[in-house]
Length: 482
Ligand SMILES: *Cc1c(COP(=O)(O)O)cnc(C)c1O
Image 1 (spheres, rainbow, N blue to C red):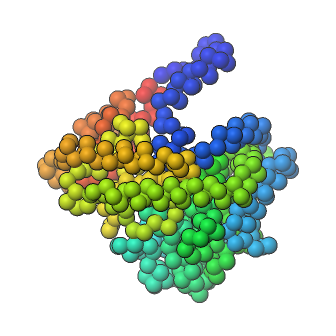
Image 2: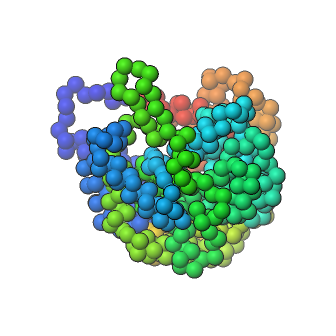
Image 3: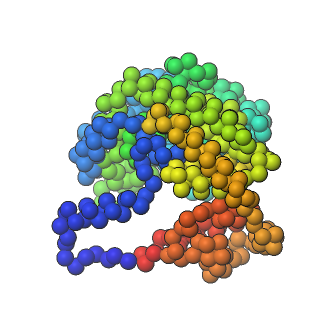
């Protein structure tokens, strides 16, 4: 643990240490990290964003009358998002800290608009982002999960419609889903919601800033914006395909009446009347100003060409993966996300492929099996991948070969049986620590070089146990002495 130094250190030493620590992280640029980060490949954007971020980082969005520039920039970002997503003169919105906050607020606004309901519920396709399960957990909304088509992974609009009942406060669909990158049938789902007088949220967190451009470039993606009858709110993350620094998303509502129940006020204390548009109260102006600067600098034509580069990279990578024996793409992705799985009899382990890619300098994100979706590797393709596709494909082919020679990863049968028996609610923190240590995730030890064995074990664990194990792991990671 490094506590507060007794004497302040000089700035250059502090920055040097920071740089040294950051060197251990995955790279955020160059297209080698195919999850979590988004790289436009345009270096000047980063410098501009950093300068804009610094200029407003200490300003506080808590009070828009004290910092009117932040309110004005927020209105500009909302207007830009509305312009892309079929907004009308009635469209309003809020800038939030990220996609999860936008989704949380969409659920909160829907729930709070129906205070008469004792057991409010929302209807989700099984592929909806986990942010909605978090919203359910935070705000006491029941989740009605509707299975998706087992082959296309698209929401089943008839089944979604049938799941709406008198307790439903919100229906959700994705454009596209994170896991498979496919766009749900928004129009029939929104129509069914509208017919029952229920709100409909389109989660375009990841697709909202790229799909409209792909449509303009001729992709056959149906409309998913406010032009679709019945859509009442849309989330879009600027820190994804708008290539802004982390900490910015927009939640749009079709009109101000729909947004009102998202707002919060409290005058019931001796301080300032707390007036909040989002979950945060004090809100840094940094991410907002950075996003505002990036949007102005890139402009509509800039995003069109970034989308074109990204789409080309996605197509090249997708075709190339189709030519690697044993690999295939799940579903028929509509956007710039790919889920790569292995044929049943492929003779290699996908988690090992992920490890082998890591040793070749690429991060691909393992996704566990869920319902009809088998274990797969998620790729978020960005503009920075354009031009380097072949290098990625060559390494992927190599990684598969290496995984083939390493052979299958097996989890001990007895351990699998034990995992199936364990009740995550009954286990103590100590028992979890023992289990984690057995899995190679002990306290303070950091992550092992190869994750395949751990992933195989986690894959074998029932979902609730996997959640608990990883939460205990998180609890060990966040210790001052770690
Ligand atoms: C990324 C994402 C979210 C959550 O966004 P965060 O910015 O990670 O909080 C929600 N929905 C979808 C579809 C996403 O891709």
